[in-house]
Image 1 (cartoon, rainbow, N blue to C red):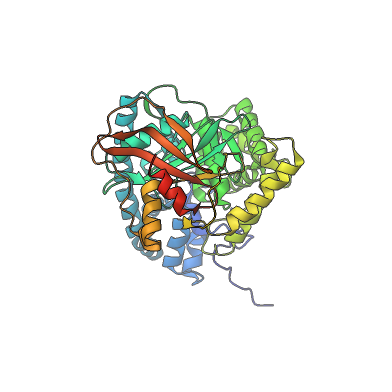
Image 2 (image 1 turned 90 degrees about the vertical axis):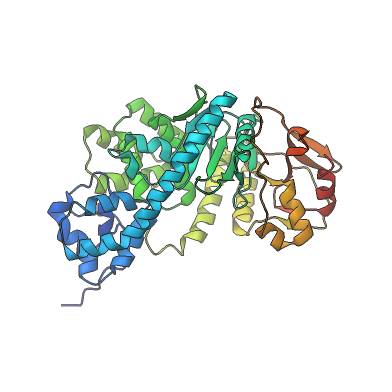
Length: 478
């Protein structure tokens, strides 16, 4: 008899009764499922086998759970499993991770309360998307893990009005994800404006436009908000931002499986068919099928969920993508992400244009855009005007950040003091965001210029993060 090799991290051996047959699904991840197919108490020895056998250390098992963004769920399940020594070790490894997530949850609650207050004052409707919506359907909403506050507003003007109001409360434009604009085939702008919060407040990610942007040029529809203030997006509608976000990450997490399991129980056949159609248009039908296939394999499902998940699993236009589970073996996914994003771009561009040439250009531009590191840098080249397109992402560099770069180089980027306003901005109806021609280039101006000696916001638009010194000087004169 030959020697049987132990499973590598992230791989599940086959053949055990009741075991899900999903490549890469680590047994420990069962603790992170909302409704595992086999109850933990009935399967505890197998679930702990990777640690008891020495295949993985408790720290490695905890790291796999962390990467799947379900630390609090796993901790809650493990606490109900008795006093097994390995359970105690896993809980010890998860303890600092769960403490950080509870601290983060408090900052998310503060940011949500402030955003709701500001949105009501401005008369702006705001959808809470992704985790803010998904957690509503969880048996214990506090166990749904989130990193920051993702929201969606109707348009660009509403997003910038909220950003201006948040900057008056200590928030600053996030330099790791500078604001950006695209436009759909009808010229309607969409994009994202992320702001980093002051101490005690979570970052707020403002998405705006007729849909949620995914990949290079995919767009998943999101309905406009219906009332001022912050409200969770209905869960069926939220499946589109959830899918778009997960598809951008490429790999699948147990968090995705749980979110899909929750919403599947509340969907009609027509709603499921509409989601499949939108996923096809965004080239994410294979990704949706992969998540649904994992959910069917590892989760306990009732008849309604089985029907909906089976529709998702069978709704792909092409072969389902092989699930890439989030484990410790993530180094190879960066190249996979670039290639998959580029190949999806051809299908995604088809929702915006009938031109084969433009669809091919979308693929080539995706390969270039996602293959090189992009951060603001100076160039001797003259500025050019760039019109937002579905496959052309126009980044907006705050003027003060561009000035710091011109004066101090990389140190200016690293030590930028931010663009928080010196005092809360006066409530002002959304409007006034516009492109303004400056020589051969352009700037984006939010507001009417100086307010009590402080300019509201001036941005230098750029596609490839290239900034010329003359453009920076001219922008300062606007």
